[in-house]
Length: 161
Image (cartoon, rainbow, N blue to C red):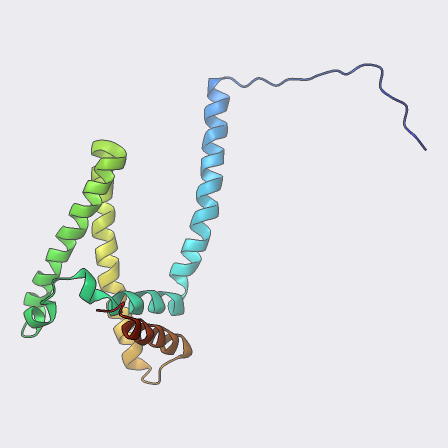
């Protein structure tokens, strides 16, 4: 059955004040943060994914550290090795601080330095956990085998030089 055409159109408008716009912006920001943080937290809570991430990171340590890091750390044990690794914390904090300063001014520099230190400490912890996991499970899993295969393939193609 066809509808009867309308005789007049009434427009309703809702105008938000400054407080309401700020509140709506905060709600939208919280929603976006939640949409990003949930997958990240899920990834961080998955042991296999974290072992894969840190094993991959460990495979590329040669590119990130001093070229002679193996010779430097060969005879270091205990506290000496921990002191050498603390240099990496300073580098992480410095890089994070510079990035934060560029994007967020002085407060961003503090936040960036803190984030850089946390990332380096997290990487150290993750590498220790990955090493423990590998030592407990001497038979390589499918994930580790795939990572090692890609690493070897990268060596054949010249990416791991």
